[in-house]
Image (tube, rainbow, N blue to C red; front, top):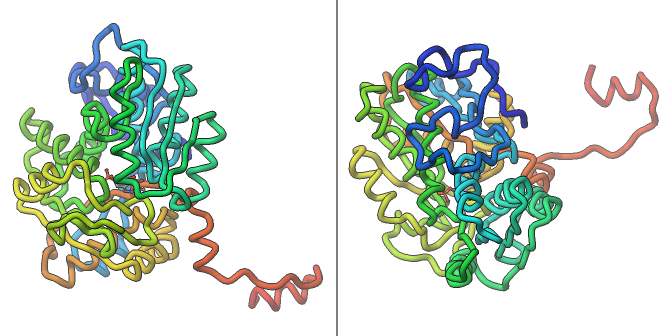
Amino acid sequence: MSPSSTKPPFRKGAFGKGAFMKGDRWPGLIEAYREHLPVSDATPVITLLEGNTPLIEAPRIAARAGVARVLLKVEGSNPTGSFKDRGMKLAVSKAAEADAKAVICASTGNTSASAAAYAARAGIICAVVIPAGQIALGKLAQALIHGARVVPVTDTFDVALDVVREIGEQPGVVVVNSVNPVRIEGQKTAAFEIVETLGDAPTVHCIPVGNAGNITAYWRGYREFADAGRAKRRPRMLGWQAAGAAPIVRGERVLHPETIATAIQIGNPASWQQALDARDESDGHIGAVTDGEILDAYRLLAAVEGVFVEPASAASVAGLLRAATEGLVASDDVVVCTLTGHGLKDPERAIDQVEVGEPIAAVASDVAAAIGL
Ligand SMILES: Cc1ncc(COP(=O)(O)O)c(C=O)c1O
């Protein structure tokens, strides 16, 4: 999970003032995009050198979807293994600037892991409220090992977020969920990187939707770069919810959301209206994919493109394949799919998907026969 990529998007002049040149060490998001972010010289830069994630060509998935190109924005390559680091870096830096004593979040897992890591770096208390039993093991381990004060509650993410918002009214406590506008500002930088790498925006962008902060952030990033003349076009935003947790698609709150993609198991998205705006302003679509489609895409990504993601991330590719069958994409489309989190976040799901053989004696001929060689 290194923050470096083989083909960095940064190059001479890429950051407006031309301060960073190809070959320079990646400076992290605030230094790379300072002029586009709500920071000043008074803002301490709390960084793990997040961002600058790979944009990987996926020719086999492109062939299946019948589009010109598919590129995977691999956000699992961020320091804590998910896209949350982009917004969290900014949220914790701003909390440190405000002399906060604690940051607090409700989480389906990745937000807590990211908040815990950045808070540890800033020397601030991190409190996390999670829906009990609904957090992938890797994420829970991360939050705990970074020293977060984790409180499981016997209710949904949506109720946990209500509780967090109430506690966040105390002085010195900053909510770092995506309802904190600074989070969206940090996350929009992924769209900047895509435009810089491709030389323009893609024609279509597929993204999983849970609390809907990320689709809001990408759309803002694409809009800002188009308005600044850095991109000639804006993509159609195709957002994908899990069928058992699809309030935006159904047009009503889901009281008991259910999906194997726990990261998007959300029944009342905080950025619901902004997701609709992204859809409508971009002539896009928000649809639902079943857990079966998500798991098919999850295995496909690992098996044919070599990219291991957590189930929620695969919703973007599942969505693209569904969009292809529904005639929502065309043969000349250039599609970016955001892969939001690393596969190792949810090791139990991966093990559940495969067969682990019984042990045999360590004899070369027997082992070779077992391998089929
Ligand atoms: C791996 C992963 N994918 C997708 C999402 C959904 O992002 P958002 O809640 O911003 O819609 C999340 C949110 O927790 C996530 O952790």
